[in-house]
Amino acid sequence: MLTSCIKRLIFVLNRNFFLFLIMLVTMNLTACKEKTEQQVKIPSADPSLCAFKQGDCLKMVGDVTLRISLSPDNAPSEKPLKFKLLSSDVLNNLQVRLEGRDMFMGVIPVNISQVDKTSYEGQLIYGSCSSGYMVWRGFISFILNGSEQVVTFDFLADNPH
Image (tube, rainbow, N blue to C red; front, side, top):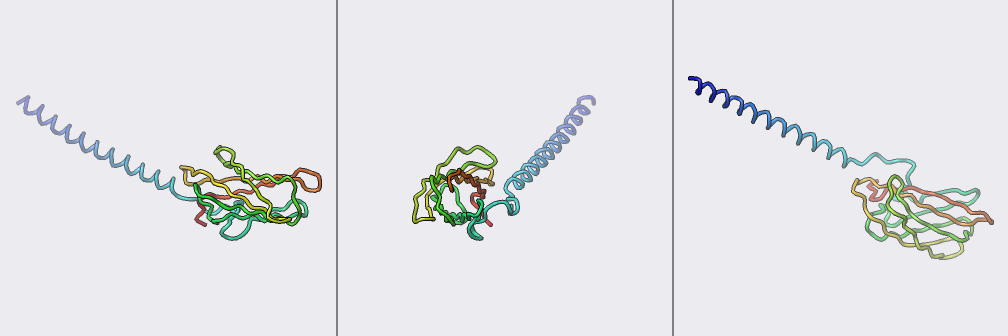
């Protein structure tokens, strides 16, 4: 009689244990799914970022206007991009580089060629980020009227907007 009671108790405990185990696994899988979905969501458009799909990014330095563009305009990572800069005045000693705004991704120099008196072009390529949301910061440095100037512009890589 005692052994049949023990067998029945073990059966009930095992059954409850397996139910508990199934519930635990199901809850963990659901939690993982929710976390994954949260990581994939792309934040709404940040108005401080240059939106090349909507047009050139305009920056002012005193009375000088800089018009910056990238092509393709969605700024895809791991693909060659064409960088263009139009200035309302002549810029001397122009240099352009990219860096990650929120994380270190190295320093990417952009080789610039002067097309005419106030327009410049270059090509660049940068790597992708596993987070799915990578903001790059461009640094444009030049000499204007004898003084060094630095302008920054931020943009989203792989921009769906």
